[in-house]
Image 1 (cartoon, rainbow, N blue to C red):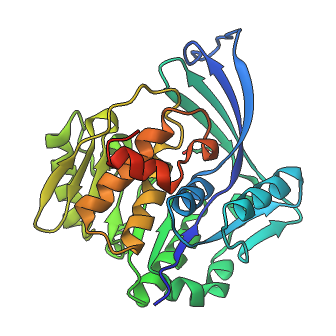
Image 2: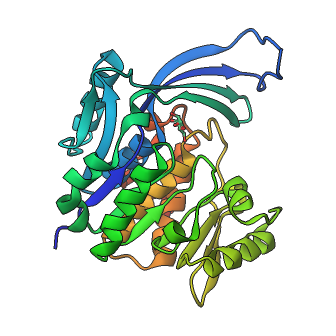
Length: 307
Ligand code: RIB
């Protein structure tokens, strides 16, 4: 069987300004450093999966512009199959404006551009590759009907689905019951369940609500408090690797990409989550989304205590 990972999702160019703290509405802050880096939740997940050792096909849409060219060059450099990365003649490539504060926290606004026209028809055109994948990964930065089309195809072929429900938006039970692993952070879990999350006990309650709505396994990522893994009959808290954060942007994306690689390799869930947590920990020590995704050797070194 082809152990390929198929990622369906967004690609953006990130315009990053590092500031002492995130500006308040109406406030101007001076003194920040500016960086341009490749981003977009889908692309970050694809790159993270590839660098972690996975064979990746990315299904996405970028503009016929300089940013689109640069994004595709980056995917190819990471060995990602770009057969299904379409070029949009009308819409520009997606762009994100990101503030990163001195404590590593961020604030992001996205102009979706071509990501908003990734359609179910493009997913149907890739049905065969989705149906033969080891795992499908997707998130919510492209139209919901497109996400649904990908999840339905994967599920009809018994391909496990990782759905990272980011950015947060309501989801119906018909979609949730097709998801193998749902990976919300605290905010996303809260929006999906109405449970206010202040720690692992609340996350467990939120996971129970999501199980009731049909999701098989829920992994609530809790930042430095680790990741709570709730399967149908098991619960475990996988601790985070302690690191000094520089930029938390894309930590969740790197977690999901590395998780997909570990699942495609057949690792059991607790081990796969530890692998993903190690990759995410390394990513927060570096600035930028895709520049921060670690290579396999770095993840293995951290897991072996050699980082
Ligand atoms: O999750 C981080 C990503 O969110 C950034 O790369 C930005 O492009 C937005 O999509």
